[in-house]
Length: 580
Ligand code: ADP
Ligand code: MG
Image (tube, rainbow, N blue to C red; front, side, top):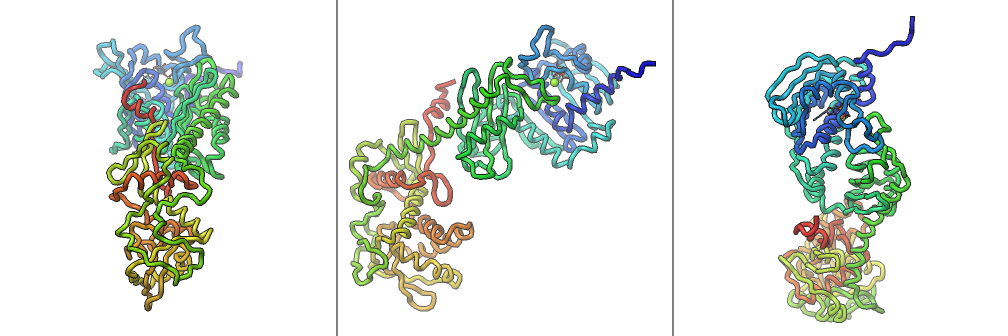
């Protein structure tokens, strides 16, 4: 008697299910693939018990006739590969005709569907691969698939499932991945009774905000590059999105999610100057190329692909990311260039009027201090900034006593006046520590400073450095001091509260593990800088921008917040519908 037997169909399907269907998220993925292939514009997903109890998906795609529905449950039945079609040029997400029979063989599954041309819909109920019911029903166009009790008849597989929270997070990751690749589709996602996501049709940028939160669109750079028939596009997270944990990298080939250690490695290489040790970047990267140049039939769950020219794809990804970085850097150097003060032989321009104050080297010789007017009554910016750079320069406007708006070649730069001044003062304070030169201005009426015991402890720590910054403070009794001079040119120099606030701010920066001098410089910068609501003259505006772009790191204030953002012409054109 022959020992070799052909396996029964239901076992074949269960074996296939073992490869294709690992967990609820893999069911979700296969069902989403089918809905996308069916041309859906709206996909509603319902999970119960993290997908163990129920995974349901409804779409408004082309649906199936009764005959197609019955066929769809047969192994190797697919509408997507016809005779003579090329297995090596696949443009649909599915092609093997394996998913539905596999899922059906390990669950309790129900499909309700109606083809657009059919007057009635069809419903089928399959338990462990056997048809339990089949009937005509009223149904909207499209398809509803309900998968209950996954792996009920394959307990060994059920055992491999992880904790509910883990399984749910796999499903959510699957949903987010597809939602990013298909922003033109409206998605809803429910778990039990709670609506988790409802994302309307939008653009990629709109979807990124849906998925990652408001303001996320400002934390990403555009990627767009083509190399010999390979187009790489998408979004790269700015530095602030780099993470110590693996974080979020999304890769798609012809909008099919895939994983590739080789592409991920190339991306990391391209971004190496952008990443600290052990950091991972954020990106959403689409690789588009002719279907005949990518083999999607190499992994059972279609998670990996093979490129006919892998080196070309790697090169395209590498160049695309380098270009995105370069663009970011050019905008900074363009801004620097636009405002570069004329070459200087002396120290960089000061934002403050130093004409009324005197420079000293440290330590100060106190008796020599001249008595000068209270700075409250005098303008605090230079009366004549660099005239030549002012004529080169485009008009800069102050709006809402808060922002400065400047046209630049690539669009508009919008500067936060407070953050910009903070950056300037911070670097200026650090320079003072290094070079021990300062400018002081004597107060007409010394201010009394009384400190709590806690404040006093911090004050003692920073006292020598306050002297270097240009403060002259004398003891005036227990925890009481007299402020006799302050750094020159501060708008708020005479407010006694400033020192209290500086001490608090200093303590906060110390807690954030900044060094003592950096903390003092940052606290000083924060409290002495011009604020929202301060009206600036044109000269003050010009001087502020000049100085900002001659700092070491003009892009952010000491708190790490941006000092300016750029609104690109391309973005404006896009928003006004000038380009497709
Ligand atoms: P494949 O997607 O590889 O073709 P599946 O087993 O996933 O294999 O699906 C079998 C067939 O069932 C598909 O080729 C398609 O014709 C049909 N089908 C499955 N899901 C849907 C759906 N949501 N809408 C319309 N047709 C579907
Ligand atoms: Mg399929």
